[in-house]
Image (tube, rainbow, N blue to C red; front, side, top):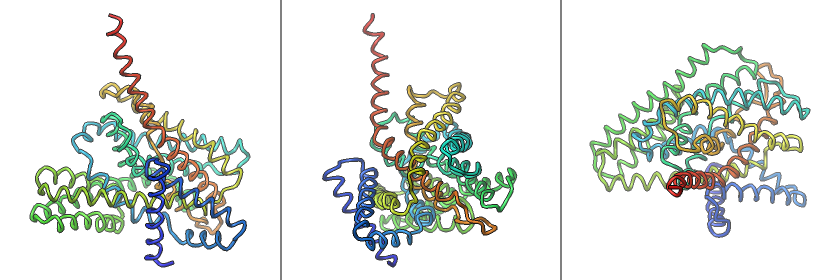
Length: 430
Protein backbone atom coordinates (compact mmCIF):
# COMPACT_ATOMS: atom_id res chain seq x y z
CA UNK A 1 0.00 0.00 0.00
CA UNK A 2 1.56 3.31 -1.08
CA UNK A 3 1.40 6.59 0.85
CA UNK A 4 -1.71 7.87 -0.93
CA UNK A 5 -3.64 4.64 -0.41
CA UNK A 6 -2.57 4.51 3.23
CA UNK A 7 -3.61 8.13 3.85
CA UNK A 8 -6.92 7.54 2.08
CA UNK A 9 -7.60 4.43 4.16
CA UNK A 10 -6.82 6.14 7.48
CA UNK A 11 -8.86 9.24 6.66
CA UNK A 12 -11.79 7.09 5.51
CA UNK A 13 -11.65 5.02 8.70
CA UNK A 14 -11.41 8.17 10.82
CA UNK A 15 -14.47 9.63 9.05
CA UNK A 16 -16.57 6.46 9.39
CA UNK A 17 -15.55 5.93 13.02
CA UNK A 18 -16.30 9.59 13.80
CA UNK A 19 -19.77 9.14 12.34
CA UNK A 20 -20.38 5.99 14.39
CA UNK A 21 -19.18 7.68 17.55
CA UNK A 22 -21.26 10.82 16.96
CA UNK A 23 -24.33 8.80 16.01
CA UNK A 24 -24.24 6.03 18.61
CA UNK A 25 -21.52 6.18 21.30
CA UNK A 26 -21.50 9.96 21.80
CA UNK A 27 -18.14 9.78 23.59
CA UNK A 28 -15.42 12.46 23.39
CA UNK A 29 -14.16 12.18 19.82
CA UNK A 30 -10.63 10.97 20.54
CA UNK A 31 -11.76 8.34 23.05
CA UNK A 32 -14.63 7.15 20.87
CA UNK A 33 -12.40 6.79 17.81
CA UNK A 34 -9.80 4.77 19.72
CA UNK A 35 -12.43 2.45 21.23
CA UNK A 36 -14.08 1.81 17.85
CA UNK A 37 -10.68 1.21 16.22
CA UNK A 38 -9.79 -1.26 18.98
CA UNK A 39 -13.14 -3.00 18.50
CA UNK A 40 -12.41 -3.24 14.77
CA UNK A 41 -8.99 -4.73 15.57
CA UNK A 42 -10.55 -7.34 17.87
CA UNK A 43 -13.14 -8.11 15.19
CA UNK A 44 -10.34 -8.74 12.69
CA UNK A 45 -8.62 -11.05 15.16
CA UNK A 46 -11.88 -12.97 15.61
CA UNK A 47 -12.44 -13.17 11.86
CA UNK A 48 -8.85 -14.32 11.55
CA UNK A 49 -9.86 -17.58 13.18
CA UNK A 50 -12.04 -18.27 10.15
CA UNK A 51 -10.15 -16.28 7.50
CA UNK A 52 -6.46 -16.27 8.54
CA UNK A 53 -5.42 -14.41 5.38
CA UNK A 54 -7.60 -11.43 6.34
CA UNK A 55 -5.93 -10.90 9.71
CA UNK A 56 -2.48 -11.54 8.23
CA UNK A 57 -3.06 -8.90 5.52
CA UNK A 58 -4.26 -6.34 8.07
CA UNK A 59 -1.25 -6.99 10.31
CA UNK A 60 1.13 -6.70 7.35
CA UNK A 61 -0.31 -3.37 6.26
CA UNK A 62 -0.29 -1.99 9.80
CA UNK A 63 3.24 -3.22 10.45
CA UNK A 64 4.30 -1.24 7.39
CA UNK A 65 3.34 1.99 9.16
CA UNK A 66 6.25 3.36 11.19
CA UNK A 67 4.15 4.73 14.07
CA UNK A 68 7.15 6.38 15.72
CA UNK A 69 8.18 8.19 12.56
CA UNK A 70 4.60 9.06 11.58
CA UNK A 71 3.92 10.74 14.91
CA UNK A 72 7.27 11.99 16.20
CA UNK A 73 8.61 13.19 12.85
CA UNK A 74 5.37 14.22 11.21
CA UNK A 75 2.02 14.72 12.89
CA UNK A 76 3.31 15.90 16.27
CA UNK A 77 4.70 19.16 14.91
CA UNK A 78 1.34 20.20 13.42
CA UNK A 79 -0.60 19.11 16.53
CA UNK A 80 1.64 20.99 18.96
CA UNK A 81 1.73 24.13 16.81
CA UNK A 82 -2.08 24.08 16.55
CA UNK A 83 -2.45 23.61 20.31
CA UNK A 84 0.05 26.34 21.24
CA UNK A 85 -1.51 28.77 18.77
CA UNK A 86 -4.64 29.03 20.94
CA UNK A 87 -3.04 29.28 24.39
CA UNK A 88 -2.90 32.63 26.15
CA UNK A 89 0.76 33.30 26.89
CA UNK A 90 -0.02 35.79 29.67
CA UNK A 91 -2.12 33.19 31.50
CA UNK A 92 0.51 30.51 30.92
CA UNK A 93 3.28 32.78 32.19
CA UNK A 94 1.52 33.19 35.55
CA UNK A 95 2.17 29.52 36.24
CA UNK A 96 5.62 29.23 34.65
CA UNK A 97 7.42 28.15 37.83
CA UNK A 98 4.91 25.39 38.60
CA UNK A 99 4.95 24.23 34.97
CA UNK A 100 8.77 24.15 34.96
CA UNK A 101 8.81 22.11 38.18
CA UNK A 102 6.26 19.60 36.90
CA UNK A 103 7.89 19.31 33.47
CA UNK A 104 11.40 18.68 34.86
CA UNK A 105 11.54 17.55 38.49
CA UNK A 106 8.15 15.84 38.18
CA UNK A 107 9.13 13.87 35.08
CA UNK A 108 12.51 12.78 36.50
CA UNK A 109 10.98 11.77 39.82
CA UNK A 110 8.22 9.84 38.08
CA UNK A 111 10.78 8.08 35.84
CA UNK A 112 12.67 6.76 38.86
CA UNK A 113 9.51 5.83 40.80
CA UNK A 114 7.84 4.06 37.88
CA UNK A 115 11.06 2.24 37.04
CA UNK A 116 11.61 0.99 40.57
CA UNK A 117 7.99 0.04 41.22
CA UNK A 118 7.62 -1.65 37.81
CA UNK A 119 10.77 -3.68 38.44
CA UNK A 120 9.38 -4.89 41.78
CA UNK A 121 5.98 -5.65 40.23
CA UNK A 122 7.35 -7.62 37.28
CA UNK A 123 9.79 -9.52 39.47
CA UNK A 124 6.90 -10.49 41.77
CA UNK A 125 5.00 -11.75 38.70
CA UNK A 126 7.98 -13.90 37.72
CA UNK A 127 8.77 -11.80 34.65
CA UNK A 128 12.48 -11.50 33.92
CA UNK A 129 13.49 -7.97 33.00
CA UNK A 130 16.52 -5.78 33.66
CA UNK A 131 16.13 -2.68 35.80
CA UNK A 132 17.37 -0.42 32.98
CA UNK A 133 14.34 -1.39 30.85
CA UNK A 134 11.98 -0.61 33.73
CA UNK A 135 13.61 2.82 33.97
CA UNK A 136 13.24 3.16 30.20
CA UNK A 137 9.54 2.40 30.60
CA UNK A 138 9.41 5.00 33.38
CA UNK A 139 10.96 7.63 31.09
CA UNK A 140 8.59 7.06 28.18
CA UNK A 141 5.41 6.78 30.27
CA UNK A 142 6.08 9.67 32.71
CA UNK A 143 5.46 12.68 30.43
CA UNK A 144 1.81 13.54 29.95
CA UNK A 145 0.77 13.50 26.33
CA UNK A 146 -0.13 17.00 25.05
CA UNK A 147 -2.41 15.63 22.34
CA UNK A 148 -4.49 13.47 24.67
CA UNK A 149 -4.50 16.05 27.48
CA UNK A 150 -5.49 19.08 25.42
CA UNK A 151 -8.20 17.19 23.54
CA UNK A 152 -9.88 16.30 26.85
CA UNK A 153 -9.26 19.59 28.70
CA UNK A 154 -11.21 21.53 26.07
CA UNK A 155 -14.41 19.91 27.29
CA UNK A 156 -14.12 19.25 31.04
CA UNK A 157 -14.49 22.78 32.39
CA UNK A 158 -11.54 22.71 34.78
CA UNK A 159 -10.58 25.93 36.63
CA UNK A 160 -8.51 28.08 34.29
CA UNK A 161 -5.44 28.04 36.55
CA UNK A 162 -5.45 24.24 36.71
CA UNK A 163 -6.07 23.94 32.98
CA UNK A 164 -3.05 26.16 32.30
CA UNK A 165 -0.84 24.12 34.63
CA UNK A 166 -1.83 20.78 33.10
CA UNK A 167 -1.69 22.08 29.52
CA UNK A 168 1.62 23.88 30.06
CA UNK A 169 3.22 20.83 31.65
CA UNK A 170 2.07 18.56 28.82
CA UNK A 171 3.41 20.96 26.19
CA UNK A 172 6.86 21.38 27.74
CA UNK A 173 7.69 18.07 29.39
CA UNK A 174 8.75 16.39 26.16
CA UNK A 175 12.25 17.91 26.29
CA UNK A 176 13.35 16.38 29.59
CA UNK A 177 11.46 13.12 28.92
CA UNK A 178 13.05 12.56 25.50
CA UNK A 179 16.52 13.34 26.87
CA UNK A 180 16.02 10.87 29.74
CA UNK A 181 14.63 8.28 27.31
CA UNK A 182 17.49 8.64 24.82
CA UNK A 183 20.12 8.48 27.55
CA UNK A 184 18.63 5.35 29.10
CA UNK A 185 18.13 3.81 25.65
CA UNK A 186 21.84 4.23 24.88
CA UNK A 187 22.68 2.39 28.10
CA UNK A 188 20.05 -0.32 27.55
CA UNK A 189 21.21 -0.98 23.99
CA UNK A 190 24.79 -1.38 25.21
CA UNK A 191 26.13 1.71 23.51
CA UNK A 192 27.11 3.88 26.47
CA UNK A 193 27.61 4.24 30.23
CA UNK A 194 25.50 6.59 32.33
CA UNK A 195 27.05 10.04 31.82
CA UNK A 196 25.24 12.94 33.51
CA UNK A 197 27.46 15.46 31.75
CA UNK A 198 26.49 14.05 28.37
CA UNK A 199 22.81 14.01 29.38
CA UNK A 200 23.05 17.65 30.45
CA UNK A 201 24.58 18.63 27.11
CA UNK A 202 21.90 16.65 25.29
CA UNK A 203 19.21 18.46 27.30
CA UNK A 204 20.72 21.86 26.49
CA UNK A 205 20.92 20.98 22.82
CA UNK A 206 17.44 19.50 22.55
CA UNK A 207 15.31 21.52 24.98
CA UNK A 208 17.07 24.89 25.22
CA UNK A 209 18.12 24.73 21.58
CA UNK A 210 14.56 23.89 20.58
CA UNK A 211 13.18 26.85 22.54
CA UNK A 212 15.68 29.29 21.02
CA UNK A 213 15.06 27.94 17.52
CA UNK A 214 11.28 28.12 18.05
CA UNK A 215 11.51 31.75 19.16
CA UNK A 216 13.66 32.67 16.14
CA UNK A 217 11.30 30.79 13.82
CA UNK A 218 8.25 32.51 15.30
CA UNK A 219 9.91 35.94 15.06
CA UNK A 220 10.77 35.47 11.37
CA UNK A 221 7.29 34.18 10.57
CA UNK A 222 5.62 37.02 12.47
CA UNK A 223 7.79 39.60 10.67
CA UNK A 224 6.56 38.20 7.36
CA UNK A 225 2.95 38.10 8.56
CA UNK A 226 3.07 41.79 9.50
CA UNK A 227 3.99 42.79 5.94
CA UNK A 228 1.00 41.21 4.18
CA UNK A 229 -2.76 41.41 4.54
CA UNK A 230 -4.04 38.38 2.67
CA UNK A 231 -5.40 35.51 4.78
CA UNK A 232 -4.49 32.91 2.12
CA UNK A 233 -0.82 33.92 2.19
CA UNK A 234 -0.77 34.21 5.98
CA UNK A 235 -2.36 30.79 6.53
CA UNK A 236 0.18 29.33 4.11
CA UNK A 237 3.01 31.01 6.02
CA UNK A 238 1.76 29.48 9.28
CA UNK A 239 1.62 26.06 7.61
CA UNK A 240 5.18 26.50 6.33
CA UNK A 241 6.29 27.48 9.85
CA UNK A 242 4.90 24.26 11.31
CA UNK A 243 6.01 21.90 8.53
CA UNK A 244 9.31 23.46 7.49
CA UNK A 245 10.24 24.51 11.02
CA UNK A 246 9.66 21.03 12.44
CA UNK A 247 11.70 19.40 9.68
CA UNK A 248 14.53 21.93 10.12
CA UNK A 249 14.55 21.37 13.90
CA UNK A 250 15.21 17.68 13.36
CA UNK A 251 17.86 18.45 10.76
CA UNK A 252 19.84 20.63 13.20
CA UNK A 253 19.21 18.21 16.13
CA UNK A 254 17.10 20.38 18.42
CA UNK A 255 13.72 19.50 19.91
CA UNK A 256 11.07 19.88 17.21
CA UNK A 257 8.17 19.60 19.70
CA UNK A 258 9.49 22.38 21.93
CA UNK A 259 10.29 24.53 18.89
CA UNK A 260 6.70 24.17 17.66
CA UNK A 261 5.26 25.02 21.07
CA UNK A 262 7.37 28.18 21.37
CA UNK A 263 6.72 29.25 17.76
CA UNK A 264 2.99 28.61 18.13
CA UNK A 265 2.77 30.57 21.40
CA UNK A 266 4.74 33.46 19.92
CA UNK A 267 2.75 33.69 16.68
CA UNK A 268 -0.63 33.04 18.30
CA UNK A 269 -0.24 35.73 20.94
CA UNK A 270 1.63 38.36 18.94
CA UNK A 271 -0.64 37.93 15.93
CA UNK A 272 -3.70 38.57 18.08
CA UNK A 273 -2.01 41.71 19.39
CA UNK A 274 -2.29 43.40 15.99
CA UNK A 275 -0.09 41.57 13.49
CA UNK A 276 -3.04 40.46 11.36
CA UNK A 277 -6.60 41.50 10.58
CA UNK A 278 -9.67 40.06 12.27
CA UNK A 279 -10.60 38.26 9.05
CA UNK A 280 -7.17 36.61 8.88
CA UNK A 281 -7.33 35.59 12.55
CA UNK A 282 -10.68 33.91 11.96
CA UNK A 283 -9.39 32.00 8.93
CA UNK A 284 -6.17 31.06 10.76
CA UNK A 285 -8.08 29.76 13.78
CA UNK A 286 -10.55 27.83 11.63
CA UNK A 287 -7.77 26.29 9.53
CA UNK A 288 -5.68 25.10 12.49
CA UNK A 289 -8.72 23.89 14.39
CA UNK A 290 -9.60 21.73 11.40
CA UNK A 291 -6.01 20.45 11.07
CA UNK A 292 -6.02 19.64 14.78
CA UNK A 293 -9.32 17.74 14.58
CA UNK A 294 -8.38 15.73 11.48
CA UNK A 295 -4.90 14.73 12.70
CA UNK A 296 -6.23 13.88 16.17
CA UNK A 297 -8.83 11.65 14.57
CA UNK A 298 -6.26 9.83 12.45
CA UNK A 299 -3.86 9.49 15.38
CA UNK A 300 -6.37 7.90 17.75
CA UNK A 301 -7.58 5.56 15.02
CA UNK A 302 -3.96 4.48 14.58
CA UNK A 303 -3.56 3.93 18.33
CA UNK A 304 -6.62 1.70 18.31
CA UNK A 305 -5.47 -0.26 15.26
CA UNK A 306 -2.02 -0.84 16.79
CA UNK A 307 -3.73 -3.45 18.97
CA UNK A 308 -3.42 -5.80 15.99
CA UNK A 309 0.39 -5.89 16.20
CA UNK A 310 1.07 -5.37 19.92
CA UNK A 311 2.57 -8.65 21.25
CA UNK A 312 0.09 -9.46 24.05
CA UNK A 313 -0.17 -12.66 26.06
CA UNK A 314 -1.79 -13.41 29.42
CA UNK A 315 1.22 -12.40 31.48
CA UNK A 316 1.99 -9.16 29.63
CA UNK A 317 -1.69 -8.17 29.73
CA UNK A 318 -1.76 -8.72 33.51
CA UNK A 319 1.48 -6.76 33.86
CA UNK A 320 0.00 -3.88 31.87
CA UNK A 321 -3.17 -3.82 33.97
CA UNK A 322 -1.16 -3.78 37.21
CA UNK A 323 1.28 -1.20 35.84
CA UNK A 324 -1.52 1.35 35.40
CA UNK A 325 -2.01 1.99 39.16
CA UNK A 326 1.78 1.99 39.56
CA UNK A 327 2.07 4.80 37.00
CA UNK A 328 -0.76 6.69 38.70
CA UNK A 329 0.89 6.34 42.11
CA UNK A 330 4.17 7.64 40.75
CA UNK A 331 2.30 10.51 39.08
CA UNK A 332 0.62 11.36 42.40
CA UNK A 333 3.96 11.50 44.24
CA UNK A 334 5.67 13.40 41.41
CA UNK A 335 2.87 16.01 41.46
CA UNK A 336 2.47 16.21 45.24
CA UNK A 337 6.07 17.05 46.06
CA UNK A 338 6.45 20.03 43.66
CA UNK A 339 2.97 21.32 44.57
CA UNK A 340 3.72 21.20 48.32
CA UNK A 341 7.03 22.99 47.71
CA UNK A 342 5.36 25.64 45.54
CA UNK A 343 2.43 26.30 47.92
CA UNK A 344 4.64 28.81 49.73
CA UNK A 345 4.60 31.14 46.73
CA UNK A 346 1.70 29.96 44.56
CA UNK A 347 -2.01 29.57 45.31
CA UNK A 348 -3.48 26.27 44.08
CA UNK A 349 -7.15 25.51 43.55
CA UNK A 350 -8.76 23.06 45.99
CA UNK A 351 -8.23 19.50 44.81
CA UNK A 352 -5.33 20.59 42.59
CA UNK A 353 -3.18 17.52 43.29
CA UNK A 354 -6.03 15.12 42.52
CA UNK A 355 -7.01 16.89 39.31
CA UNK A 356 -3.43 17.36 38.04
CA UNK A 357 -2.68 13.70 38.84
CA UNK A 358 -5.80 12.33 37.15
CA UNK A 359 -5.60 14.85 34.30
CA UNK A 360 -2.13 13.65 33.27
CA UNK A 361 -3.17 11.36 30.43
CA UNK A 362 -0.71 9.25 28.48
CA UNK A 363 -1.09 8.89 24.73
CA UNK A 364 0.51 8.39 21.35
CA UNK A 365 3.89 9.85 22.31
CA UNK A 366 4.48 7.06 24.85
CA UNK A 367 3.50 4.40 22.31
CA UNK A 368 5.75 5.98 19.68
CA UNK A 369 8.74 6.05 22.05
CA UNK A 370 8.16 2.42 23.05
CA UNK A 371 8.06 1.37 19.40
CA UNK A 372 11.35 3.21 18.78
CA UNK A 373 13.24 0.79 21.04
CA UNK A 374 15.50 -1.21 18.69
CA UNK A 375 15.06 -4.96 18.37
CA UNK A 376 18.72 -5.66 19.13
CA UNK A 377 21.65 -4.24 21.04
CA UNK A 378 24.69 -2.56 19.53
CA UNK A 379 26.45 -5.93 19.91
CA UNK A 380 23.76 -7.64 17.83
CA UNK A 381 22.21 -9.45 20.80
CA UNK A 382 18.38 -9.39 20.63
CA UNK A 383 16.55 -7.21 23.15
CA UNK A 384 14.06 -9.62 24.71
CA UNK A 385 12.44 -6.93 26.87
CA UNK A 386 11.31 -4.82 23.90
CA UNK A 387 7.99 -6.60 23.32
CA UNK A 388 7.25 -6.56 27.06
CA UNK A 389 7.81 -2.78 27.29
CA UNK A 390 5.64 -2.18 24.20
CA UNK A 391 2.80 -4.32 25.55
CA UNK A 392 2.80 -2.71 29.00
CA UNK A 393 3.03 0.78 27.50
CA UNK A 394 0.09 0.15 25.18
CA UNK A 395 -2.05 -1.21 28.03
CA UNK A 396 -1.28 1.78 30.28
CA UNK A 397 -1.95 4.28 27.47
CA UNK A 398 -5.32 2.73 26.58
CA UNK A 399 -6.41 2.56 30.23
CA UNK A 400 -5.24 6.14 30.77
CA UNK A 401 -7.14 7.55 27.78
CA UNK A 402 -10.34 5.61 28.51
CA UNK A 403 -10.53 5.65 32.33
CA UNK A 404 -8.96 9.03 33.03
CA UNK A 405 -10.33 10.69 29.91
CA UNK A 406 -13.93 9.63 30.61
CA UNK A 407 -13.85 10.53 34.33
CA UNK A 408 -11.72 13.69 34.57
CA UNK A 409 -14.76 15.87 33.89
CA UNK A 410 -16.71 14.17 36.67
CA UNK A 411 -13.76 14.64 39.07
CA UNK A 412 -13.54 18.35 38.21
CA UNK A 413 -17.27 18.86 38.72
CA UNK A 414 -17.25 16.87 41.96
CA UNK A 415 -14.31 18.83 43.32
CA UNK A 416 -15.93 22.13 42.35
CA UNK A 417 -19.15 21.03 44.02
CA UNK A 418 -17.35 20.15 47.25
CA UNK A 419 -15.67 23.56 47.29
CA UNK A 420 -18.97 25.38 46.72
CA UNK A 421 -20.62 23.35 49.48
CA UNK A 422 -17.78 24.11 51.89
CA UNK A 423 -18.08 27.82 51.12
CA UNK A 424 -21.82 27.77 51.82
CA UNK A 425 -21.55 26.02 55.19
CA UNK A 426 -20.33 29.02 57.25
CA UNK A 427 -23.06 31.20 55.78
CA UNK A 428 -25.80 28.68 56.65
CA UNK A 429 -24.60 28.34 60.25
CA UNK A 430 -24.79 32.07 61.05
